[in-house]
Length: 99
Image 1 (cartoon, rainbow, N blue to C red):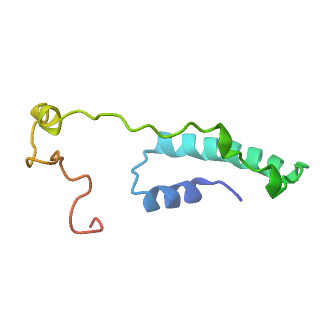
Image 2: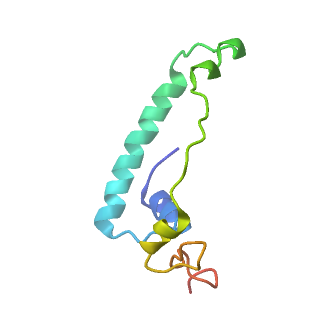
């Protein structure tokens, strides 16, 4: 895959990022380096791992049920709450795409 200014600008547009010229050039260089690394990995001889050697879950600890903090005490520290839940500002604007 060729990494050029158009590719970076297209990816930035899809990601809703605004890149200035310096940032665009930096991303062209960084993505170009990543592409070279990935290309080198594609050419590497990496042995297959059979499914019987997959992750062993026996190393995981058992779940433990512990007493949790009281909801009222936690909500005392919240700038805004509904009585049961924290209130937080919207992360995304309503209405869809930018114009």
